Amino acid sequence: MGSQKPFLGVLCWEEGGNPKGLEQLESLPGNSVNPDSYQFPVLFRRVSGANYDSVLHNPHGDILDAMVIEAMTMVNKGVRAIITSCGFNAIFQKELARALPIPVFTSTLMQTPFILSSIGSKKLAVITASKQALRPEHFVAVGQEDMSRIEIYGMDEQPEWSKIHLTPDQPLSTDTVAKEVVSTAVAAQTEIPDLGAILLECTDLPPFAGAIRDKIHLPVFDLSTMVTLIHASFFASL
Image (cartoon, rainbow, N blue to C red; front, side, top):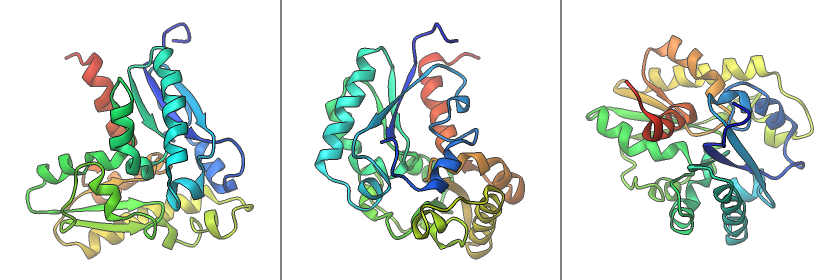
């Protein structure tokens, strides 16, 4: 596999300066920046200035420009599609797609219209890293304007996960985080009688998707389901 050209390019946050808890989560298989999460060659590029604050809370044009530069570097190396390491990059979807010559998938939120179309009149629960930071604008940017069937659940309301922004220099218990993620999904199923599916916005959450599926027995969409679709669109075989 090492001699093969990378199929997918991943735009990642800049190195250093991010919460210690996020660095722990990035080491888990299934995380967007872990090479072991992919069954094919992947190229990673870090975007200068892209971090927890500038992407979640203060997105601006300078970050977009830096993303385009790094993405074009990967395009020139032969990647066939681009993703990012944070679902909040949805806010840049239209601009990035216009700027690049290959398909761009900034966020798992791009699956929202697809999921809602598949579950009739049922509702979709979106589990996000930060309920406060996830706004309707992120959904509109990926083609979803109607929010009436979407319920948002924030991991930032969980004690262990909230250490990421409350005490960024302190480590997390990943076992406790796993329990919090599953309990958040269970809460969604309990509180939404007509729940049809769950979407994990955060690219740190796919390592826990299997445990959610085992517990609630509903479809769970995440970065892995999106990447599988992207890869199959180029190389599908029966």
